[in-house]
Image 1 (cartoon, rainbow, N blue to C red):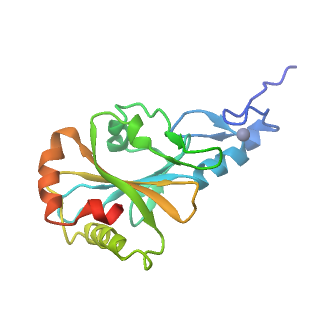
Image 2 (cartoon, rainbow, N blue to C red):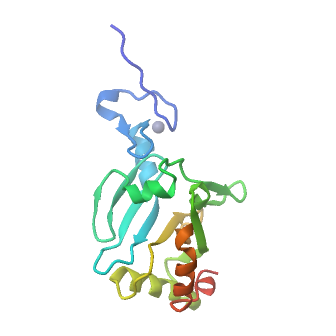
Image 3 (tube, rainbow, N blue to C red):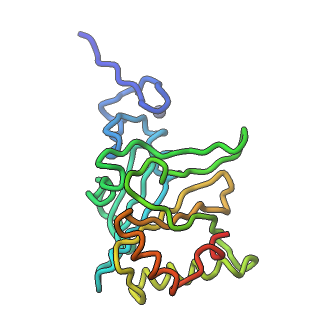
Length: 198
Ligand SMILES: [Zn+2]
């Protein structure tokens, strides 16, 4: 009798007792060992979709290279990617985009792997912004969007990605190319995103 050997897509090691321990990456469709599966979800990026529709809770996807969890900003309940997420990647997720700035440092810039989107602004947000008061306006704006106090005229996407500095998150505001002009006009009256993220 021959046993099927199953290898982890990420570390390429043979998964012992694969029938019990192999994990399935719902985003990549690949098989992972437990340890790679866990580190993929721990080091995830998050994208939030503010639809602009009244009383619609913003949706959210937390994703790595292989795995994803989705739902709303209030509750994550699914392990599959919603269609709006796949649409940003032209229906085929090609993984994230790690930009290495030197041997030890870097950040994700996954927008580069998307199709048909326009980056409105991108920069850095820190968990504690008391030392950088101008960054507070981005937090305040996100808070107002999340609570529905302000509604974009077309869907607005905000992407948060890990960097090698655990205190800093790469933050990018995105829109579909066809909605970019309308969103840009609207956002100007909401917040000075450029100074908020620089
Ligand atoms: Zn592995």
